[in-house]
Amino acid sequence: MFEKILQELQELEGVKHFSIPIHPDKDGYIDKECPDEKCMFQFKVHDEDWSALFDNEKVFCPMCRHEANSKSWFTTEQKNQGQRKIRRHIIARINNALHEDTANFNAEQQDHSFFKMSLRFTGSHGPDYILPLLSKEEMELKIQCQKCNARYAVIGSAFFCPCCGHNSIEETFANAIKKIESKINNLNIVKEALVKSVGKDAAEITCRSLIETGLNDCVVAFQRYNEAAFLKRETGIKVRRNAFQNLEAGAALWLQAIDKTYSDWVTSSELHDLRVFFQKRHLLAHTEGIVDSKYVVDSRDSSYKAGQRIVVKSDDVIHCLKIVKKIIAVLRN
Ligand SMILES: [Zn+2]
Ligand SMILES: [Zn+2]
Image 1 (cartoon, rainbow, N blue to C red):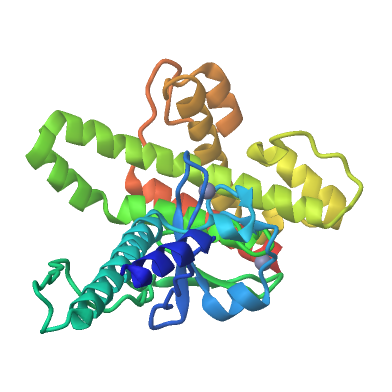
Image 2: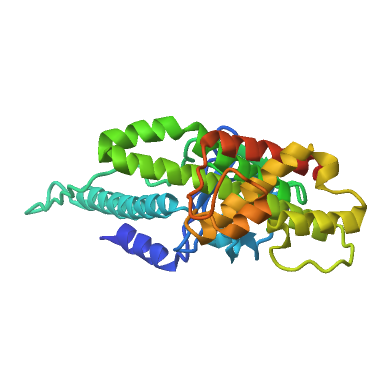
């Protein structure tokens, strides 16, 4: 009696791990999640590349570059679903064994005996195999690393290749542009929603801040690209920190390194506007946008007097972005 259940329990005791297959989505990608609790960024990796290219010891988070071995990247959903599947599998195996033992016991009872015992087991009886985990919906933004060719997918943007950790300046710049454009292009939608939910004042302040941070984003994207592109050339010229945040200093570095500079790449009026935008951004960062006499001198913008507050419109951000892109396009080639 109860041979089957004893046997099953013994077998279960010996199991060190259950394996659950994971089905890729219809584009061939499987879900991953950054194990760092601060981040938990979800992304996808192409199933073929995961087995062919990735290093078991080292996988990187595309958002924060956290590093961990390849077993650490299951998503919260996969872990929860997996636990449920294993629990169901164990219960099914135990139930099935008890059903079998019960049936065997009942079959062994002989009709002619003086009294008859019969067992009934009411637990459910059913399949005990583990079905694969399914993947979440496909992600639209698919990226292939320029360095190692690994394919991965994200929502929004990402900075690092999960396979080799490479941070492409092109990718970072493209992400920054996308951020600026989405801030400016969605301004009306954001404003409308905010007016309805939190009122006109808060909507106005929030949208103004989105425009002003857009200007800051342009300067930072420009600076980072310049710096990375300059260092990549290994000219041996010493670059102090944030040198490219200053248009004159940046221009001088390029002139020294390649004998050409911003004034060769954009018109003098564009360069003037860019200088004004850089100075306005400096005020936003350091004086809450209040004009000082240094601004008037450095920007050569005579439309403000010291003590005024600068005005930044969404068209300014679009114009600034256009000039920044024009310079970056030259540097790229
Ligand atoms: Zn992360
Ligand atoms: Zn890579």
